[in-house]
Length: 272
Ligand code: SF4
Image 1: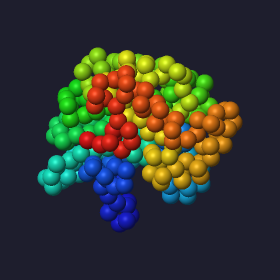
Image 2: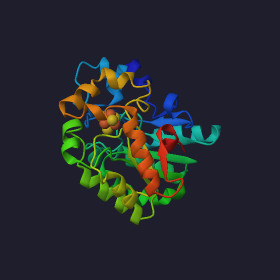
Image 3: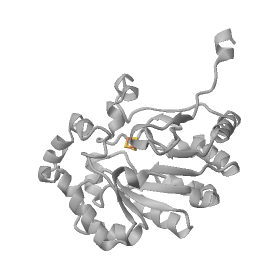
């Protein structure tokens, strides 16, 4: 081992939250990269993706952190004050490789030992169900936010072909709910959907947050424009839906179907 290798510290998992996630003390991204590779993913426009030399969605690295070093990092953070965590902001914590690596599970285990004030687990993968035992132990300190941007599988396949099928996400919401684990559906960003989408959300999800390409990409729609989302809608023959009023109308319909306080728009719905 060289001196440099001997001094090498494991990467940190806790990063101070900022921007859209102000309101949290930290974000945790257990992975760098994301194999779901959604066409609209704003991370595509960030240095981590731009300077990689490989297309976003085709690579993934697990952060090499063992449980003891994360436990030390976690305890230090807890000593400083109340800890609120958004997991994850630049990847999905339930990558297919999480089946084996169990990195996200390791993080939740440490959280169960010494719970945070609040942790939001943002995912579109039904693998989150594997960790229901830990999520249950976190009680009201956790919320799983399951992305369901549309109810139309053909739309999902066109715009996020590598992401888990919608049926598995509806099932995950149902099963988390049955086990008493706080859960919301994140319609983020709202994609073209059927006329029955709002009613289905009202029936299946106790809480819903809606976002769109104009207010949810962290740059007032610029990143979505750079990613060519209008052109993608045009290819689908749905360009007329590519405007802020689409999500406003959808939010109004959902509000008429769900109890007061169950529907959120944008950042508010993701905050602790
Ligand atoms: S799952 Fe999230 S981080 Fe991954 S590509 Fe899709 S939007 Fe980006």
